Each structure stands twice: as structure tokens, then as C-alpha cells.
Length: 135
Image: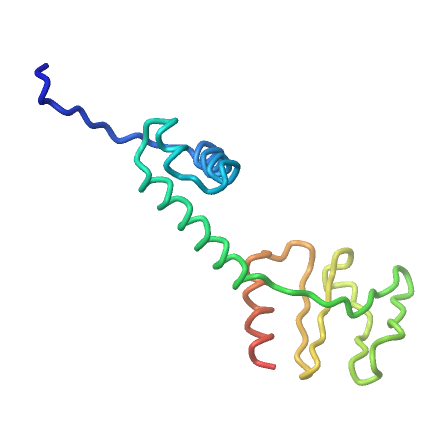
């Protein structure tokens, strides 16, 4: 191999390694150059990871679903919570509605969502976001 040859190889980083290096950058007071030099890597790689991490956090924050406690139906007698207005009170779940783990959500606009313990959380989250936007 002559002195003018440059050997390049592309390294694949695991998510845990990326997180550790970004934590190291934060511990150094944001000095990307110091960490990059220490690990023999390009500064641009760390800058790209950091911006991607910030963008991912922003997307996660925008998609966060907020819940408000409305009340809890009682066990055996299915008592109606005292805080629910008469117009929004739900009848107790029927035996065929899924029994244990059944959840009924009544929104102020009169819409009602009933699910059981086997509901797909991602799908329910989408439905609740759509319902929130429509009110």
C-alpha cells in the first residue's frame, strides 16, 4: 500500500452506541469536535445524529395524546361517577360488551367510543386524536 492510498470504510453504529456518543457530547458541554476526535470519526456524523434526535423528539411531542380523567365506573354495581353530568352518564356495560376490561368513553359532543381490553393501542390513539380534532 502506498502512502497516497486512502482506505475508507463505512461503520454501522447501533442505536445504543449513538446514544452513548450523544450523551458524551452533552457531557462535554456540546463540544462535538472533542468527542469526534476522541473516537476517530467525522464531526458531521455527530451533528447529523444530534439533529435527527432533536427532530424525532419534536415529532414525538407533536403526536403525544393527552388524557383527562372523567371518572371510573364501579365494580359490581357499575355506579355512575358523580362528576359526570346527567346527559353524559353511560349505561353499564352489557354482558356481551367484553365484560372485564371494557372501557366506554363519552365525549362532550355526544360521541361515544367503546373498547375492550384487546383494543389495538395505536388504532385507539388515532381515533382519539381524530375525535379531539373534530370537537
